[in-house]
Length: 243
Image 1 (cartoon, helix red, strand yellow):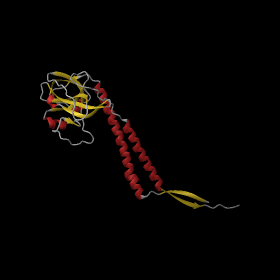
Image 2: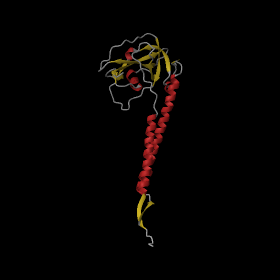
Image 3: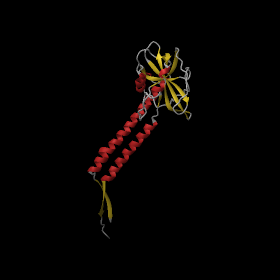
Image 4: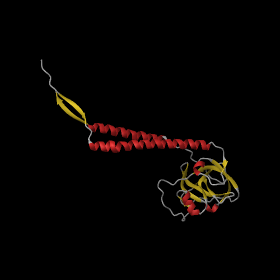
């Protein structure tokens, strides 16, 4: 009678590829995604706690932008209408439009804070005309640190005040104004704004946990594949005495 026997004999190349490269890679990617989930969890906790803080006056001295993000602050000063730019391709309830960004000179200071005054409807390259007062006023809003898109396309800053996106570095170079390292999303209660329905989504950790599960599953499959390739099968013949 023939019987099958399995022998564990790891081979060099599969071991180097699967255990030496792919398995550590998948495990490290899974750990990285868990770390990203923890960062999102921490960011969400910070966001929620800061949004519950009472409104305070924006300090006249230089401040740490990261410590103010998501806080609601008030600031007194003057709009600088000639510094207004318009951010294109912004949608509200599915309709195309623009975001209006106007610098605001802080009272008693040479510094400015950019105010996102909200959304206005429009298409093409011609946003509607808008009135911007130049008298002393007090505004409130949430502090936000804008970031460039994942793919930052070059555009001529001087060609138009209609921009595809806002970064503080671009605005600094274009305006030559001294600006603080964040912007203010104008609150609905403040005057001289437009549609203000700011996204307040909580940073999600679920996506990263899902990716982590996927990478760890790949690691397990890699290990199982290595075990399969390390097993060799042979047959043997056994004989029994006939009576």
